[in-house]
View: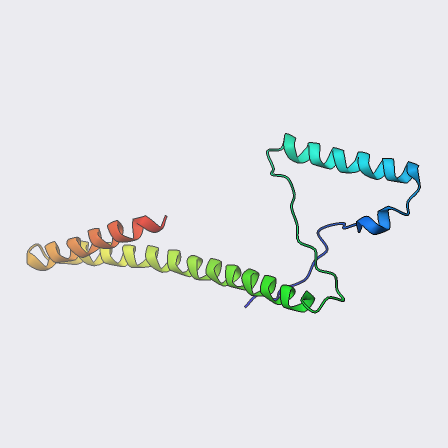
Length: 126
């Protein structure tokens, strides 16, 4: 299981704190926000909408736990998908090698049928 690490990805300013900035600082902050929004639009990104949970709120650790569970599960799915692809390739190669090695006759026909089914069924996952 991958270790989940909390990372700082956003700057968040509380509106009640911004009210105490000077007019000049307030204008600079607004200008930076507009530039960041324009950058997102120019790069085809959606408007940034977030939920902020302050560290002194009772829900804070619960929210972190939910995010960690989601990210850990995503990591596990990627690992399993990688294993699946490797085993699928090995199985397909083994089925083909077996079919080629079989003597001409019913066993060989059956082996090639199995090989074709493996290729057909697992192709959906690519």
